[in-house]
Length: 279
Ligand code: ADP
Image (spheres, rainbow, N blue to C red):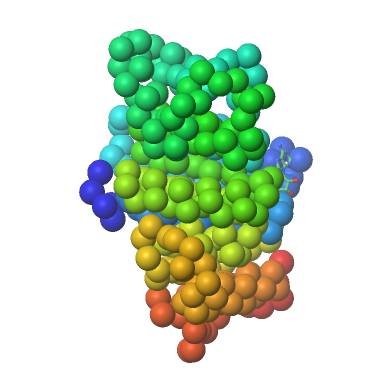
């Protein structure tokens, strides 16, 4: 897939649960190949519902979820907040699971499992059991298991939220390097402004329920990220902008845009036929 081509496009996607809860409302979003898109929103705004629509685990009540190129089988990698490993299986067998389910030959599986283990820095732990691993290492196994199928898009649902800060920083750096090296397309859900800006080449802010795109901005910074960026003025400026956009989004339905350099001249623009304070 060419960098910059859309992998996935949601057009006016809504999701209303049988209970009548409208979790998503006419959400439109394109994810392009090779980008690291972070999705930031308050709890209950529909982030999980959105990932479920993308994963094909639920259908939109209205609108569409379109894949490019169309036709072929979609390869998705999914990483959850919990590593969800099989406790009775060794690291290499946990990572092999999706290949076994897809009936990939043992010879090809061995190569792909070995490569995924190397990518997440778990060499030497192939034959360990999950109980022998730290929380961060378990998450590395979960990421390797998602990567082993060579996904078109890697969906990550608050994967580092339960980890201590030092481990999280290390994993963020390693994930950023991995994404760069393998030219991954990532959709990463987080509650954290800091994490969204640190990891994302693009940050999409969702409104409170029903979720829709409230702001969409590019983050300029080194690729891959490194600790120098975390303490840079550019990073802190971007965090400040995203915090402001999130605060505005929490106040009411708005469509916001920022220039890549952001900062001055940032103007919240009410979307057509909408104003502040509705909803
Ligand atoms: P988030 O991941 O952002 O916390 P969710 O997508 O889990 O949000 O939920 C969005 C809204 O939809 C919430 O109000 C939640 O209670 C509601 N919701 C989620 N799943 C269901 C369901 N199966 N039936 C009814 N309401 C649901």
